[in-house]
Image (cartoon, rainbow, N blue to C red):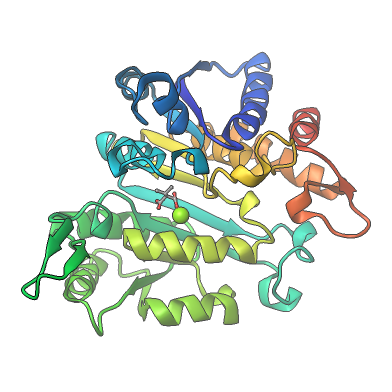
Length: 354
Ligand code: IPM
Ligand code: MG
């Protein structure tokens, strides 16, 4: 089992180091894993002038799975778009055909006080967001700058989805719902966008193959509201790239901190890229305060989804639960009475709990 490790920028290297610690501990316990690191994002630009260097892409293609930290930082904000770190992750998703992004938002009982929402609203929360990842306005052409008829400058992007793109992500959504509570909510903006009208039509058609799943549709603005009003009404949410980007950040905060939210980005054959849903947090980079649990939990998702090693995945998740139960907290999830720990201490505690 070969894993490409792309730590990236900001807090990326610190948090990935903790996940690597955990994976190496499992390797000592018998899990056959090969890890290889490569520069990516801003670090890729620094090393090779490209956020996704040729050698990094080659390694990612050859590996069975990719473990990522995060990309981006103020140092790179002024670069032209093709050189921006974000383009590294977007190109990598596209190059590997990682169209299905799974972002589970699970509230650990120990963190119920860390959420900004009332305990009764969030306790027991377990939502899976299935976000389409290689289409939509993120990749639609044409895009760019131009002058309009009045010779004013304008910027424009294209939102679009093809029928096969909608069918395959809807299929992932229904399949996920079948393994869970058999409820699927498709989120769109059908009252305004043609892309969404088409999306809804195709999702309804795919639904015919899943009569056991209760399908509902919701406008994205309402979904944003319902996620904070009554998030437990959701089981699986399936949505496009842009809406999924926004709603998954929102959902993460229900769980106390975006520092807890792992993600899997999968292709059609089980290959995957695993990364925390959060960003590179340049303001706290290098300070050993970032929460590594989202990345550690992402490595559990890797074992489950790419390597079919449910047992090992479960052990990582149980170890995370155990350190939370012990009262260990990084700054983002810290509350009175808990023991505040740094990034590497948290990683060590998970390893010890394994
Ligand atoms: C995410 C991030 C990325 C996205 C950025 C870094 C390009 O926000 O993974 O959610 O918009 O997809
Ligand atoms: Mg995002």
